[in-house]
Amino acid sequence: MIDDPNLIVGLEEVDDAGVYKLSDDLALIQTIDFFTPIVDDPYTFGQIAAANALSDVYAMGGKPLTAMNVVCFPIQKMDISILQEMLKGGMDKMREAEVTLVGGHSVEDAELKYGLSVTGTIHPEHIITNGAAKPGDKLILTKPLGTGIINTAIKAKVASEGAIAKVKQSMTTLNKIPSEIMQAVGVNSCTDITGFGFLGHACEMAEASSVGMVIYASSIPFFAEAEEYARTGLVPAGTHRNRKFRAHQIEMDPALSPEMIDILFDAQTSGGLLISVAQEKADELLNRLKKAGIEESTIIGEVTAKPKGKITVKRI
Image: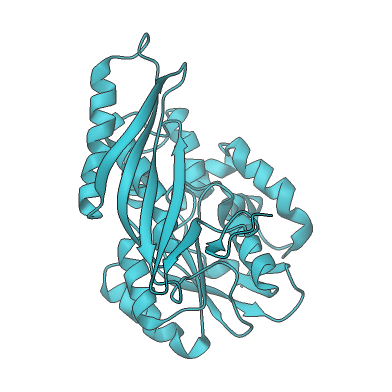
């Protein structure tokens, strides 16, 4: 355990980023994320990696200010133009987020990897963690699921052009707008959906908040193609790991299809926000999200008092 009175969110909490208090009205949010390419186009990969890294700050209600590039590049195997395009994609996404690139670090590696170390700011009393969901809250998801399955289909070269276009659009979209809206409305808890999958991150929120959850699978937004590809076995290894790790915490409706279960556990890249909001504010939040163009935003469940740390998934 790290003993520092200014460390508000640290290693002891399984949250999206660390938060360190600088003064009574200012705290730093710090996070880092990088990974291997999930699409063939280096420019698009750069955009996705940047959006994914910035998402942790947005999930906590903060404003990202600066970033540093984290690059692993196989200089002996890849043309330098690939690196240039990748960094351009990341830079363009940072400009969209109004984030200043202040530096970075690169190493030669056998495998290409890219991401960002991000620093943001927030008022110490306005931090949105994944550990403050309350019984009676409604749960809202802001992006469709299934990017991991479709990315696997892309690697297998069987994904349709339509599916590719949809997941690229989703993964390159910043969580900036939904973050600003949830701050304006006032919510209890939030996390972003990434590698642990929807149910993995929902379990983290349930554990951290000492609550239970009921999820209505029929309300979950997902890419239709993901269901099709999952049916043929195009499911990433990370999705299977997520399911194995969290299965003991989840009561699954036996009527759910195997494909839908795969989608619920699917390892996401640059996914949406899972927001826990008081029931009386849920309609306002949802309406404002949709009015702002976050059209896939949906109420997908609710928070319960018990069983703590457990999730019930119903088909309806």
